Image 1 (cartoon, rainbow, N blue to C red):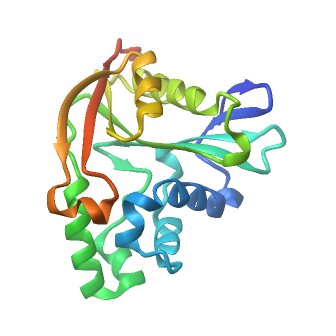
Image 2 (image 1 turned 90 degrees about the horizontal axis):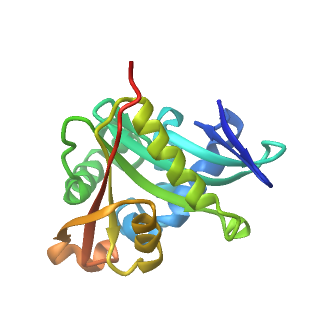
Amino acid sequence: MRIMSKPGFIIRGGFPVALRRQAAEIYFQAFEGKIGGILGRDGRGLRFVEGVIDPRFAICAVSADETRLLGIAGFKTVDGAMVGGTLRDMAAVYGWVGAIWRGLLLSVLERDLAEGQLLMDGIAVTSEARGMGIGSALLDAIVDEAEKRGMKEVRLDVIDSNRRAKSLYERKGFIAGGRHSTGPFSRLFGFSFATTMARPLVSRQG
């Protein structure tokens, strides 16, 4: 579903089936420092993400001819997430023992969703497409999606070392809130602290 056209790219809801592998690759490469130590950099992490990535909870930037994925933004609601999956999905890749300990570690990153809240769960843009305004366009589309769904706010978490992303979020009206730590798992996740930011919304439902 096309949302908007920009010079050089199109913002659309979800992604075509043919671009599923590209979607998984872009997501995994962007967040490998955060999840690669748990999901694995031996090909299994990418295989897991490709198996569970859900276009219903994604907004993408594709090339003008819609053959290449240039960027992706995931979101989470009470109904699901772009990269979720079940313990059974994880066991299919890692076995049950591997699935259990990985699931427990990943739960450290989980944050409960409040009623009327949409979680923006990461924006990734390919290196070839940086500087085209894709990250900003994807964030605008996420906010628009939340408003259409009647949400009260969009929330996100940004690691403290990613100052460029934090500046973008502030320009888009996001306000910093609480700060949380990964504690003894900081080396595994690749960061020590993250800041929660939120942007209040005006509902368009009805």
